[in-house]
Image (cartoon, rainbow, N blue to C red; front, side, top):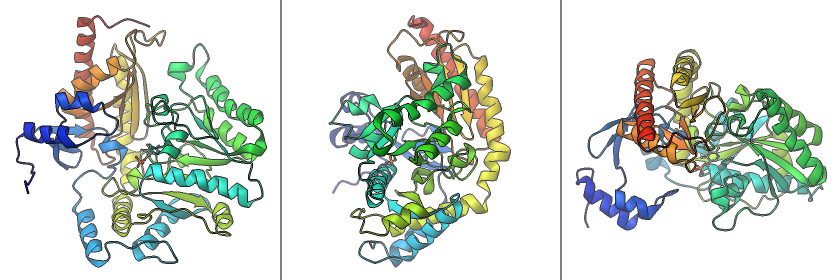
Length: 464
Ligand SMILES: *Cc1c(COP(=O)(O)O)cnc(C)c1O
């Protein structure tokens, strides 16, 4: 057998990758021409690639490596758990210590009466659980017609058929027969792109009231739940106007609509609290978790469920579950991650040091000629690139053309910053230091300058 190692030439690894590996969310034909960047190791906030470049990972992988890379404690815990009990399931009246301990810990951390955890292997799986659980909940309450789940355009809730249907990504819905029935999408609170002449707070209220309009139109007796990310992540770190969430909460309360907060990104310190729902003052009935739950060291997700819903669901057999629900190794790793977040007071570091410093630096990017808006909550931020700050114009080129050019400049400058259309986004490890934030901002600024020069050269600095 050929052993494939870090020491192989990059081109050889890229050729093997192109020959056999289908990448998610990638035009694979195009990538195989170009060759994927090969990441070989990581430590703290830095990645190393097969060419020896040190790259500052301002995305924490996919928004998940909250405690940073290279924490031995998690490797030790995983090895110990694999030796003791590498696998057992939690079906059929069985349990094990890692699942018990993690569920108890999550219940302690979660606000209010969110005391019950249904485990999954990922955020997508957890949202699939939520679809079935809220519908089954209403059926058990004698209201089986309450089956519609209201979500938002440009939301991201995962990539399975169920969770992808909840999400509002038109590019995803265009492929493979989504959305499934009884999912209804309302508009997102994206003032920069869609607010027109309306003041931001008024726009926030208007977008929230679309939920009420949808409930009245569809019928209160047909709507089961509303699902939303406290701050939209993959949609471009869209921070809602302050008026938005209080109005959403009022509407959910008034019409007895279950509120599902998708905390997959916002959870576990990203916004400066354990959950984004605390930062944005939301009282959800269910929270979806994944990503930062294990800092990405092991695949695990779940739904944190209120006592009321859990007790109703408990009255019947819930015909649902995953082979890896509460996987012992993943659960043990997640528990160790939570211990580190708590004992090292990483949320305190976010609140007192990293987030205030990053906010000040991030907002200073507004001085750049390309940057029209800079938004940030805790450790997730975005900037909108524009050819005209006054009119908030989009570029005349296809959406994403400019963002991609900027992202390529970031990559060349050893900074991972992602683009969503023509917004640039960051979500760095929570442990990032002020010195490392300086480096992040310096590389981002250089990349923006180079992008600006490139746009001039290609004659792309035009408004749509
Ligand atoms: C990433 C993400 C998901 C999906 O999680 P996976 O683990 O990729 O299945 C769901 N919701 C939100 C808000 C996410 O960011």
